[in-house]
Image 1 (cartoon, rainbow, N blue to C red):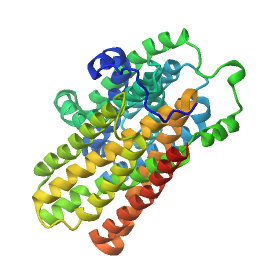
Image 2 (cartoon, rainbow, N blue to C red; image 1 turned 120 degrees about the vertical axis):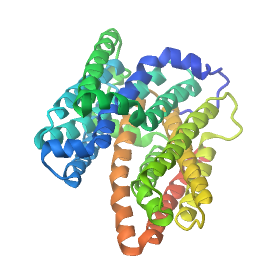
Image 3 (cartoon, rainbow, N blue to C red; image 1 turned 30 degrees about the horizontal axis):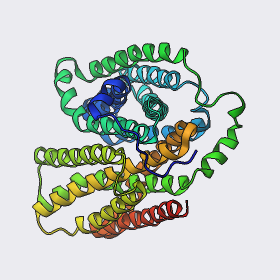
Image 4 (cartoon, one colour; image 1 turned 135 degrees about the vertical axis):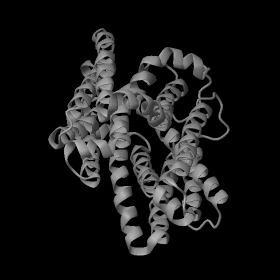
Length: 405
């Protein structure tokens, strides 16, 4: 089913939607805890495992590879089982993974990273699609999915300070065991609720595994939308990977002060995602999602092109905020358009989207590092601007498909 035109159905307010969707919002926050603990307590974790920070920290890359592989392999199957059952499986795997990470040796941590990546690639699209399924109108469904992603981005910003206090009491192992207990406990009601529901695609509607990918490819604008998501993630996550080093080198910003910069970036992303998702859910938006997508990626291109050449700290901070807000707007537009256009295949579409963003995360850091090594921060600027420029071209294709439709 294709839906590109705004509808007149009223969309509930965010508070009403949050009351209805709170189990999915809770699951989205829990999904980020294990990897946040891993990043926060990397030094003591490396000491416990008997490895260097670089060696143990590099294991996180296994999570991205697992998320990519599992996301692509399972995408055609995401809509063939009740969403809640799929989410319950993701939560259970998340709980097992966190408990395994608490063991603390190198092999356990490698398995932890692999399984966490796999579990999040299952959990994220299933809860986003399940939240969208709670509402009939495309506008409300899209808003529900973006509300889940906004909650996830807020948790990414708040998880570190929230976990710092308990970590002082019971250490990083206690945090991982607590995450494990919460995940396993939460999986039970998801499993119970899912047992009484039907799969989104049933009976004669079922298609073969490979045919599902062909159906996804036929969704208007799906391929350029997925390309935009991957490319903008590569540019943004690559930029974040070297953000602390840039502020330290150019402005001699100490880690304590840089924490405020990180909070600024996270808050900008959260607000951009929240407000863009809310706007796109209005009954008659004066800017169509395809147009807002294009505008957002153009602003991101301008911001990243100027960021590394900014002469003053205030201007650089402003560009940091613009980067976060513009990328969040693009992310909200991609999610909304995929939910609107994919119909019963929204779980598969969101799964492929999540896998592409996982690939983008690691490509961005690698390509950004290559640009930094060859040309310093100007080289990094050129690299990320080039990636974003290609994303602009893909967004133009999405816009043309809207006009053609």
